[in-house]
Image (cartoon, rainbow over all chains, first blue to last red; front, side, top):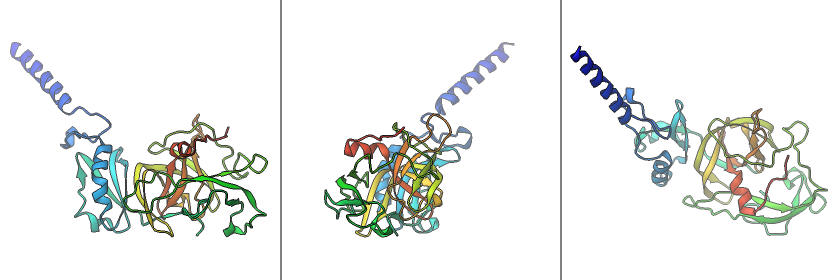
Length: 112
Length: 182
């Protein structure tokens, strides 16, 4: 009986600790079951820190914050195929997915 | 568009319809260019709006879209949110509906003059939301709830897949004006 109580208490402690360690905040990308770590930085901060070097890459037309499978992600808009840039842009950064999308060049929409 | 990529001067006549659609100066003038935010043509610039404002009179203007549009926008604006349903009425594609696809957009935009980078932009899909000539359209909420027709952005650029709009709050703040809507 004592051992059963001890096991139950230990289990509760483990569950609570796991919940604290994996606690989600800011709608980030924390997915304990999938082994993702919780982002230490906000997605806005990660985007700000990396946009200039990404925008300097030929074929990158823009960056933004969007959604991927219902969670915040970084979007990279390109005028070239995504595969051409994957070697220079990681699939995830600081815990946030980085999604490359071919949008083409953006143009001012005056009379054309 | 009124400012013609920084080439216009304050006081220039603003025509409706525009010259591209046969508008003549001064017969079709509805006002004069009152102010515009100069665009910095650089891939490292941090432009936030591409907008100009004209001085006109209530006798020459209406508040609502043509009858095949969404009607009169609200005066109270709203910040764009992911998956927000939006609509606009424009010169080329008329009434279209779309969705806020991404926010905090940093984008390079191609003009006749060169490339300009914009920050803090609203990204809208699908590609059919706009086309050339729709620049200047007011993007408003398209929900059926209390936010319906609240202004969200000012359409100015796009590709075949996405449309880009300035946050409407930044546009209004730049000129110190509000929307005379419903």
